[in-house]
Image (cartoon, rainbow, N blue to C red; front, side):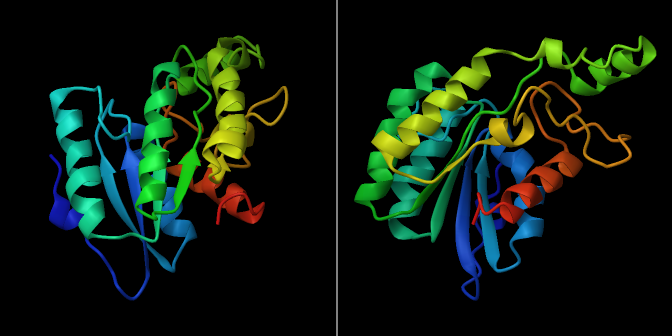
Length: 216
């Protein structure tokens, strides 16, 4: 159920940022809310729904995005639009049109790239890696295409779209090893499933991005 009066509640004493996207946008809310005390985060999230104008998703997705882009934003300016999704290659042209739309309406955009994705729940892979003493097990189950898509989107954000880009993939997997736990004692997995940060993971990743100056 989507409740606009709750999810789109504005606070005129703060900056108002609108977080739009699928379940990947919803997963970031705990981290963003905790890291930016001077920002009021509005949210429009629907599962399996890319945050794009002229959505080609389900009727429910199209209805939500039509409301956000055609009704809400033109009459309710926000200080920044945060676009987050489980991006697919087919979304790139739609994303180009969406960023162009935002620029025409003078709405600053921050684009979040794809997550590292596993072909099985991370917490299960970590449990098996401990049980069978195979520390590289989770790494071997990464979906390779997400790294390539992140690289492409990072390049397009700099050269074509010209918007700030936040690489969740590079933050979580900066080199050969990925962050797999949300705590120093390695007791809390970063994700419960294969591609969504849990609340502990979101808080950790957003805090690190802020500390590095990659998210402002």
